Image (tube, rainbow over all chains, first blue to last red; front, top):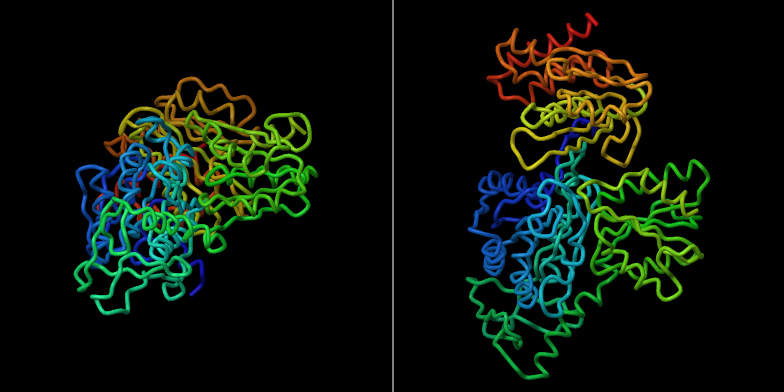
Length: 387
Length: 179
């Protein structure tokens, strides 16, 4: 069979649904919202066929709550939403993080704030995906830039949630969610699937939260004979509420360290023609697609320019950025927000880098928040303007 | 088909432009081309501006929206006014003259065909206007093969509408032969 025989035209949201099923997701609870609706629509048809469950809940708060419950009962669980629903889910996302319950939330970003622009793209939930829930908590957030990669990162999001026992967010934007591209999906045997580690101790010895050296600890499901308590309050190893400073510290340290001790495993960036670059673009998702075309155009006219694209938005790829950008003089940061990634780049690059200066070591923002995409020419023109 | 073709199908919501875009993209996949299809629409299910972009290329490209068009299909006056400026100098404008009364394009090749009226007259429905104009577009431009287009129409449209849409496609081909 030629590879072209297996080539199909697939929509971004469809790739999420396909990736979810291939990753072993067997529960979806949520509330449909443009531009994520196709994910719920497809999974409502497909999950029952493989013995999975789909429940349309009364709202997004119930949606996130249902997937946490399903996950505690052993399911691989997912929901999908967009800005307004993502805001409602924040409480549940914090609960999933403190209770270390694996789940995946897909947020197909549209224009905000509030109900904003339902059918138009944005990248303005980057910070909400990191800091939206109250309290200190780790965040793993992925952001693909093609239909093929949406499929791959959906599987990765599910795998990471299972491995690290946390809520993982997959960001798309309206254009990626609705875009169709030709893809060839890999054979299922070649897809790497991660399942949560199960306890090997007798039930009476089981602790739901343990301090293993790498902060990765086993998880029993309800109904398997293991007893554990689940609460949003700070808790001890068995899950019971505690105010003891030493026990709270252990919990808070684990939430942080299970991310910070695995940066290599978590962080992925794409290096696009950065080799001799003196000017660098930092862009994610759909804006990175414009940036790649811009790099190709500018390279043709002799400009030494490249792109770094984060596939992992959080944890932010600090070290990769420092390394790739150490020899560049100008960093262009195009984004469909009023500067959410810009601030991070400034934080990472440090004091000698200034925004919109004419001096060398400068950061040049390109921002659009009107529902339209940043085009390759927007970037090309800016680069020519600032030289 | 050679190089990269940026195609914009534009009109108002409910005219089936996104469906037409998907069908064109599916045909390109059958042809083994590299393709993206994107869309822009409003919150309404009918009315309001709607468009579908299809980029068909023989080599890899990145930005998925059409920025300057090799082919522009405009089914409404509003769409024609809004997008004609971004037609390439050697581009092709196909306007539905049932709705588009003023065309102000200088250098490009222009076809003005009353697709909506012809669909109503010959098929008793305006619904297959999208497929008829797609047939016209493909015969004039060759952006995909006609066999692939036929296959894609059949794969994408419910069986009970096959007959009407295949007829519409053939009328589109014939209209192109006459121009």
